[in-house]
Image (cartoon, rainbow, N blue to C red; front, side, top):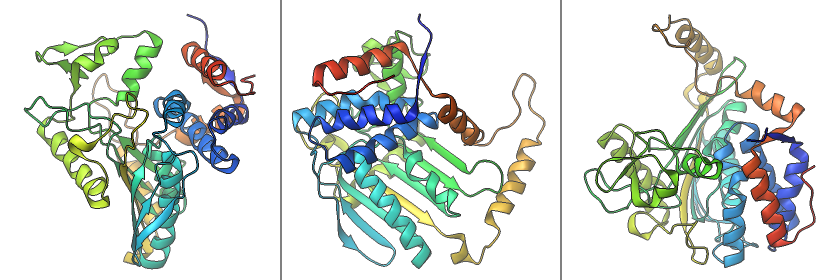
Length: 351
């Protein structure tokens, strides 16, 4: 297999922005979404970054995603709000929700902003890391953009990967950032393996016969497995209630598969929260967190295990290295981006 080639992040942002612009997305919105998509790759969330461009382009072309949405607040209190994304690119509504939640946290101690009428918005880490960098705690969750999971013990696909993310300030090198699916693996990882021609590990999916499924090309024949069995199922449902039902967004059988259906509104539901430690009289949260994290790292590892690491550890240094040296593009991803350019006919270069 050919070696990964690197591309300058700014070059990649321009490429993605021009791709989105070719489908009628205004320059300002295209630049904002492109920046967030590339930021996902910079911080190591490659399965939810530029890799998703083909899906976004297909939904813009098919009419399921509105290229010129009016993202607006439709309900609001001092500490809460509901944003309607008007079926636009999901990053736009989620970025607005994140920023509003942070503003409300500064004013009321907490800000909780729900989103309806959204779309896939990349990794949730994009919408919690800024809180931690600003001295706040963050949380975000979403109803998955397709149902790949049955209720525990059932066989009907009624749940998605329903991810959740948390963040917290830390006086060390990296904020605490924890972003996970409520399934053993995110569907994006399986799609990445399919693109690269690699198998899935056992334990990610099972077929309807209950046997392990390891061929990513057969993903439609089976189920994703929830983390922790019934515990992951319960967490996934809880997220669906808070991100979907609470916002008047899709959950359960109403969820539209945003990959296979490019013409229908997904009405994806999400939420973003920000919490100010100062509202609890805590002025040294970051210092105390750093002390506890150091205690955890100092715990002697079990035989055969690496030293203890905290969620988010090393992300800042890795991100700086990618920004300085360029982003590595797998040959299959680069070929797909070039195919997208040929298909949609926009003028841009990957370098």
